[in-house]
Structures are given as structure tokens and as C-alpha cells.
Image (cartoon, rainbow, N blue to C red; front, side, top):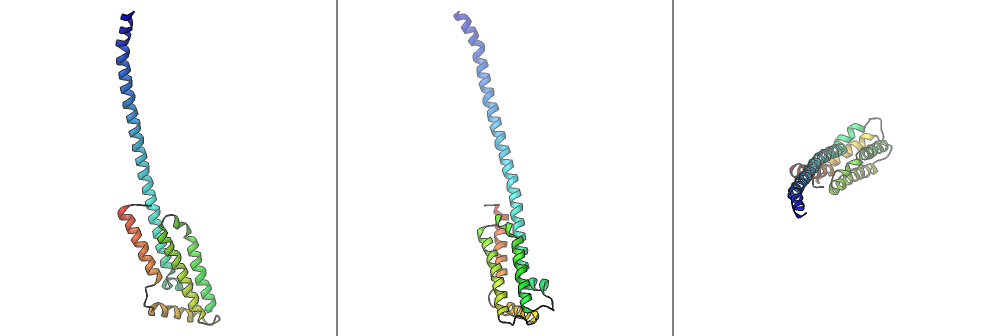
Length: 181
């Protein structure tokens, strides 16, 4: 009987050792393959996220550029308008453009988004403050000229220029170091 047990153990112990070794090798392979696939998926996701973030910065740069009075006024101004009509159209245009770009806040930092919101408000305030100095039924050309005068004579940097600088710096940082968000 002991001889039979030893005979059985002689075949089963090496088989169990081979089975255990095979199991460990297959498990290690499966784990490493899963990790490799997860890493590849993470890399693909980061590439997509990076593209989306860069597109958001591009759209916000375009938005801020379009907010600058030198771009905004020629798009809206008509010689038959009054000061009030031009003011309303400029503000409407700014708000519409802003609403069109609301979703970009998902892809940029809080600092950049707050800057963009601030620029929008500052531009609206500038237009309103200059328009309040004029008669609402005066020709729109007066508002146009006052805004141009303000832009040319102001010593401080325009809010749009400051915003562009902040957006560009962050976009360059992301390009250099990758997405950190």
C-alpha cells in the first residue's frame, strides 16, 4: 500500500509543481498584459484630453480676440445706428459669444476661466460707461469714436491683452509639461 502511495506521489507532486508554475506564469502574464492595456488606455485618454484642452484654449483666445473693441465694433457698427443701439448690439454680441463658449470652462483652469469671465464683464462695463456719457439717440459714430479714443489714450493694458497673456502662458505650460488637471 505504501508503495502505491509513493508511486502516486511520484507522479502527482511533479504535476502539481508544473501546474503551480504554469498558473503563476499565466497569472503574471495576465496581470502585466492588463497593466499594459490600462497604461495604453490612459495614454490615449491623455492624448484626447490634451487635444480637447488645447482646442478650448484656442476657442478662448478667439473669443477674447473677438471681444477686443478693434474687432467687435467693425462687426456690429452700422452708420444708421444710435448710441443706444450700438451699445445694445455690442453687449448682446459679447454675451452671445460668451454663451457659445461656456463649455470651454470644463477644459481650462479656474484662473483662466475667471479671467475670461472678468474680461467679458470689463468690456461690457467699458462700453456702458462710455455710452452713459453720450445721449442715447446720438449717432453711433460718437460711441465708436469715444471707444477708439479710450483704447488709444488709456495707459493701462487692455483686459483682452492681459487675458490673452494668461491663456497663452497656461496653454504653453500644458504643451511643455502635459495635462496636469
